[in-house]
Amino acid sequence: MKRLDLGCGKSKKDGFLGVDSLALPGVDFIHDLKIYPYPFEDNSIDEIWMDNVLEHIPNPLRVMEEIYRMCKNGAKVNIGVPYFRSFYATIDPTHVNFFGVYWFNYFDPNNIFSQKYQYSSAKFIIEKKEFDREWNRNNISFFHRKLINYAEKHPEIYESKWSHIFPLNSLTFYLKVVKP
Image (cartoon, rainbow, N blue to C red; front, top):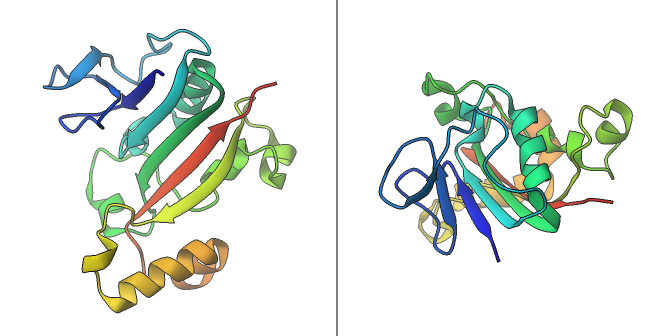
């Protein structure tokens, strides 16, 4: 099973091959994710983890197409990004993209956004959206825990009605590659 941690930095996920533009401890492949194609064969990857990387890359659509090219049908793709309303999304001067709950809908063939706009031939089923994954749910306030639960059960309502008042910090998308 071939699993990649794209943009792993110094904290490569256990059991994954690390890919980063810097020669850091744990990096197995040195590659700038802004340069295409990535150095992996078509249909060769079973799982990808990309944590707080996609917001730094100028062309996230191209990144998703490259991930799609490399992955096998049914591969898991897990992408963590700062939530666009988050304090953390806007303070980093290297962030060039911002993500809300609808962003990956354009890749999901079951979603009207993908069907209507067809920005890409890369297709991913959205299996789950998770807010503030990196927070230990046992060590957060009662309100924070309830807000996360509400946002995960009603992401569209949370984003349109409440997120500007009670912003959460991050979004993680759990996707599955769909190929013909």
